Image (cartoon, rainbow, N blue to C red; front, side, top):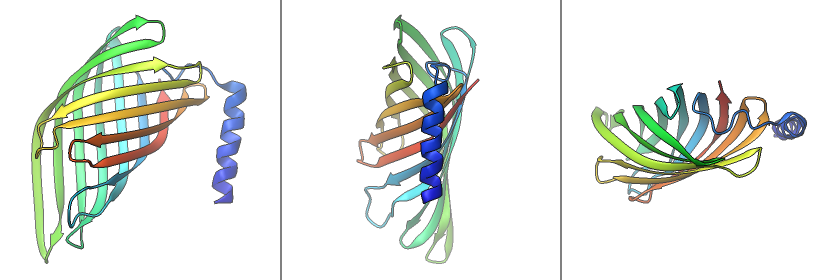
Length: 196
């Protein structure tokens, strides 16, 4: 634990001397993060796993985006794996320096599988999504985002998310996020953004 804290302190100290806004307010990036989710359902335990996102902007005010999310948890005291693939596009507009509004549309593919009472269970679904959001450059080193996304999936239709980024080096930022859906499932995410 001391080694991790020392590394984090060194990263912050290094970031204080080399920080720039380069990884912020861009649409060419790759995110990788650990995600813990509290699932508000009886017999389903909290999950943890990996969340990745990729964005590429070939022209101004437009970007293609994708992602992969993996979670591991327990249901009825049996392990299950959850996979989610996201693909879509977004449009963004700068309403003033350091403030963007955006809209996104795309699709999500969900797959869950595991063993329940000795029987292998697998379920897959494909659903469209749509959302709106904002990005705001709070300081040269800090960006804050807010998003609302709609997905028609098992009643958990709306997700509200807030994300913060802190620049630690050129083209590198730390990422922290919290989200909640209308079924009161809460996800906490922490990781890194690499801008291109």
